Length: 102
Image 1: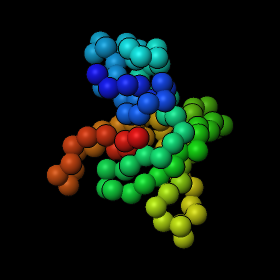
Image 2: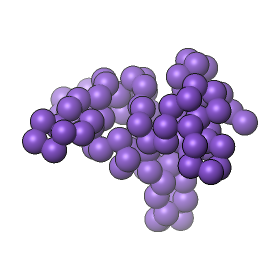
Image 3: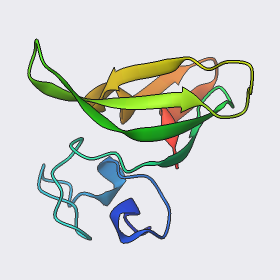
Image 4: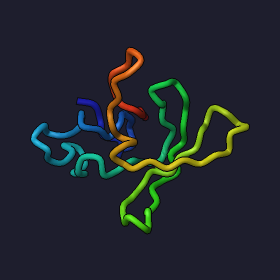
């Protein structure tokens, strides 16, 4: 098993770190899809993004991931996704795996 990102040694905090019965992370105790640590992530299409942290969607009262494009200095846009979407898997264009990897 890979190390949990909450230990600061890499990997992604995804279903791979859970005990398989819907329980918490074996390394840090976090519940599935509830934590995305700040850092640089690789998108499945090959782009780099920096997660700045999580923000609260005040109208729907849930946390979202705030991130920006890292590998393109002219794009200063900031983006948000739900934690569930950010940590989800995708299956398209010949790729099947995590949407973002640390």
